[in-house]
Image (cartoon, rainbow, N blue to C red):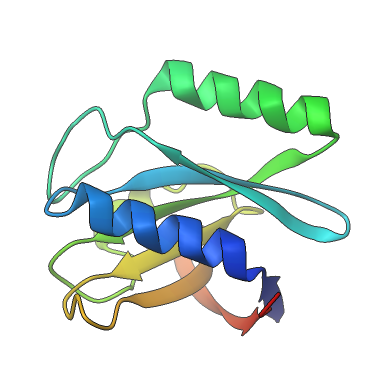
Amino acid sequence: MSLRLPAQIKQAMLVHAENCYPEEACGLVAGDRRGLRMAYPLTNVLASPTNYTIDPVEHFRALKHAERQGWELVGVFHSHPHSQAYPSPTDVRLAPDPEWVYFLIGLADRDRPQLRAFRIHDGTITEIDIEEETR
């Protein structure tokens, strides 16, 4: 399984992760049948380096914006400020939707952030290959 990731969506996620450092960044991703359309960088109301909770008002606004565009929320992204881009046991336990894509940004090496994508279903983690679009 692979996923096409537009450059501007990747950039939005990476910039948000860097801007939120040393806390975890978080946000949502919208798409349609043609692919990913938007990353919504949102506020981590926990302001924590080890956990995140998306601001519920911002979550609702992102959902409404996506719906107005004819998109749906298809995933979430967050950063691991001091570790690799791999789902933690907490990430697995709290994964809300087995159909969503879970993007993780590892900032263990901030000069070379690591972005990976996964599906999480019934405790099983499956990595999704990312095909980066350059335009």
